[in-house]
Image 1 (cartoon, one colour):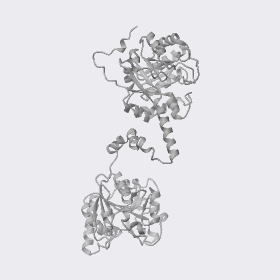
Image 2 (image 1 turned 30 degrees about the vertical axis):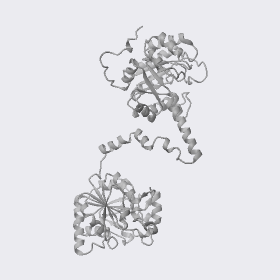
Image 3 (image 1 turned 180 degrees about the vertical axis):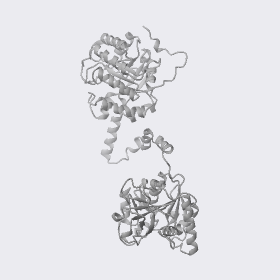
Length: 554
């Protein structure tokens, strides 16, 4: 008998080209290999992160994670779906606990093909009857017919599409009380049938019968063990016995159960998170394991970044008197909405769409506008001037693609993304569902728009819409929507706006003019102002009623 395959060559072995070849190399390596149990994508990634060379996809653990017994209650296709997530989450080989092969030789053939399709490195099948019962439940479980099981091994090896796919034959003779001679007889038969390795199992607290098997077997092919019951045996004894691979079979799922029980008990008892938050993994850790950073990088590479060259001017100089005492010590843009200032909620949306350069025109209580990553521009005459005077304060920013927005509005990101991609040098956003949000009251002003054509709900409707006029006093018959407070300017559009602001300064209309006045002057001067319709998904915060809606909106 030879053990030559356990000795390494003097030359460095070539790097395995597939995960299956990596597993096969580990099995025949002179070094002892360890596989760690995992039961889903997250635990598999943790196993790889810990430095293991491979994953043991435990049938017991996957069943437990699915909330069912380890009695083939989870179908092989359900297990296969879990394995697909595990393979996607890792780069190291996965050896699957394939129970009895989920049926006869034909089921094994199909199983092996599907595992190869998903990049699984190998499968371990056990010589018991289908449906299986966990080896540690009961005594003396019946074994499969040896010749029939050899047929399963041959069928699996004949069906693999990866030449290095490993099939490990698990022998239950010791657990079922058939003794060492029967275990050796079956091991030889399974080896001759083509098994890449033999897993010899035991549920005794001592490793004596496992080591006795290894001595008699003399490394005719690699031996895999699962020391769940005889865990106190020193690992060096496995190395001395020439064992190829040790599987730590169910410890991650058991650790998870213990941890989840303890955390759930503490929270249920204390009705607070104070006692547990510092003892568990952070949400940041979860994001890291999920690969969020890779997705961010991929988005930069593959998704269009419409706002990357656009800067924003936020008009936020007013107090917002309709909010009463809420704005006694801060401007409207800094009132709290779900734990964050309204302006922070707005600038987060801008940044999410790629707009990084944000200038905020401030006035009332300007010292309280102290958010990071923005630049403030003061309008010293905010109390006696209108929105166009505030825009002039940031006129130096009208030197390229630019977004002008009111500082008291919230909107879904898709609205901004669509606006940034829209054609036209000057484009405004109008809500076609203006009737649904119409509300009257002291200080409430709605700037409605008349357009070249009304909103059409057809999803293939791509005809352009032009602004005719905008203002608070349009008759209902002419209203096509409500202006949201968003304007996108191309470089050419920004130039047109600068020219119009200069003209307003010359004719003395600038100080009292608001944005609708500027838009109407642009239209009257022959400049095309495009309209992009939306259907809700935005709001402006004028009073306490709007503030309550804003909290629900977020």
